Image (cartoon, rainbow, N blue to C red; front, side):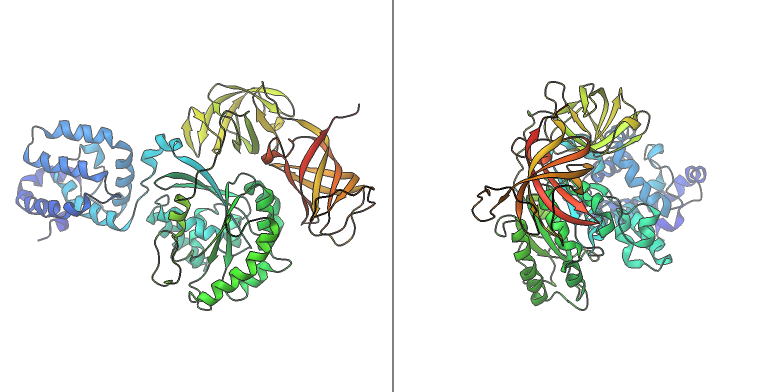
Length: 563
């Protein structure tokens, strides 16, 4: 009779029955050891081995058991809770294993179960290593593209494949999504967490999550694709080092995303303006019946995109990498797929892992543009550290209001650390400033080297899309790093020839679409900015009006205020 069937109703009973099932257990135990052999090289199960090994010993050498188990418990305390959380709910008899020092028969009965679970789910393996996380290089990846191209679904799938979301949570999402008759949306719920986003199936705010590979630590920024939420998307892209442009290969969907009103074009352009150097284009929904992994369709999407991306400023040979994938099935995200024999490159996650290192200077001045703020036992701000390094208890200055603040605690991707280097997404708890006194777009600097603030500046602007002409006195909305401010073009200084770069001798009276000019701009309030030459991340901007991106530009010179 299978020993698993004799699982008792409670632990108390268990102790009395111990003697009677002893024989059966021995057989179960030898079987268990045989099963456990192949798990030793398995990376996922590495943490389990010592615990079971000691358990085998504990049965044979009673005297040694408590000590060994005690050690094992202490060393693997964190993962143990997590692993236990899975079998617990499925097995009525598998109650608080961890609390009982792991001896006692029911544990052995639970053991084969645990093993089987283990095979299916790469349970969240990453959290135990979190204290060392900052040692890996941090890379921020923003997912951009037209609405419904599958950005959140790919993000959710990546989190599942790297073990950041366990199988059970996904099964729960799947059930809930089925109840709303939206069963294909369940993966995106890992990133679209609030009710509104789930009901409509549209991302609104920039979702955040993180995952790790062998060499790097990635933060996923899941940008909204809908044109109403482009300002949020710009905020997300300004924190990214790498953009993933998701396009849908499904017949008709690629075309709508790419034509005049679609977001594929606008997002690619905004990502370039926000300072993203490397672009990966994921051709998603390759498993769709209308596509069926066809090379022709993939090449067609590629041919249409390349000229446009070239025009935006990406170099097709160096900066862009195309790859086919399916977000819903996970094909070609982590493992290569048989469906797609014509694609010879690496799948998505290994490709990310093998990207060259980004050069960031940690000895520069501290610059942390603020993306968001809230109250939580003090004032908490979120943002990406662009340069310099921040440590606990450091005194910093909040520009442009010149508030002196102190860093009480530092969280890098929700893991507490003592210091942070450039490129990390941080949550800082600050002392000496109220939450109401901070706005997104403010910048944390060190007192020795403050960033520049001002209202008037000269910039080189490229007019991308505007029906009529633009004259001095034209108002638009300026997006520069994480700051959003109203701006007026007060004067147009000269036109710049696109091919030769020569400046016109006379002052133009207006500029129109596709022209490049140097103009003087004046914002409604004081903002933090730097010239593009000194600090590119804070010198690039976009001008938007009536929900469209009108122009992109870079700051050439800051003009001192005349009192």
